[in-house]
Length: 209
Image 1 (spheres, rainbow, N blue to C red):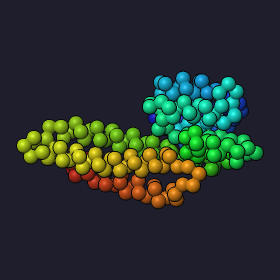
Image 2 (image 1 turned 30 degrees about the vertical axis):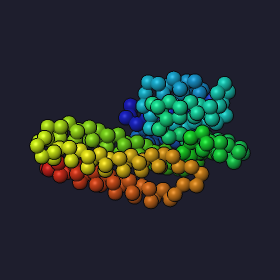
Image 3 (image 1 turned 135 degrees about the horizontal axis):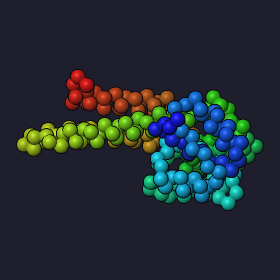
Image 4 (image 1 turned 45 degrees about the vertical axis):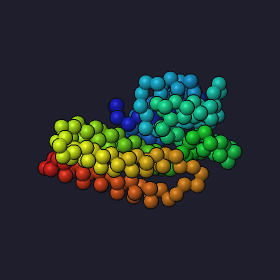
C-alpha cells in the first residue's frame, strides 16, 4: 500500500530494516529501506521524505557523514533525522549526532512504543506543514483577483503569510531540537494554536465549506 508520508530507513543490516518496517507498520507511513549511505543520498534526490531513520555505524560512509551531506543540500537540509545507535555506544555518539544535525536518537534494540511515538510526532508535523502550504497556495490564487483599489487582497495575503510563518517557525524549532529540548507539549500546543488561527482565516474566506 502506498502512503503519502514516506520515511527513509538507512541501515546496513537487513534484519534491522525488517524490524523497523515491522514496528512502523501500524502507522500510516511508507518505510523506504536502503542499506548504505550512498543509496540513501540517491533516494533523497528523487522523493520527498517526512523523516530519516539513520544508522550511525555503517561501512563505506557512516551516519555522521551521511547526515552532513543531507544537511548541506538545500533540498534535504530540513528533513529531520533520528539516529539509530547501539545501546553500548549511545553516550559516545549522541553528542556527535546532534552536532551533525540529528533531532533525536533511538538505541538498538528498539523499544517499539518509543520508536512509534517519536516517529508519529514528526509524521504529523510533516503532514500539517504540507497541508498549510497547500492551503496557502490556494488562498494566494483565490485572492489574486482582489480589488487593487482597496488593497484588500494584499492585506489578506500579508496576514495569512504572517500566520503561516509563525507555524513554520514552530515546526523548524521542533525539528532543530538538541540534547536539552524544551517540553514538547508546550511547542505542540503553540503549533496547534497557530493552526487554529489559520483555520479561522480560511473559514472566514470560504464560509460554508
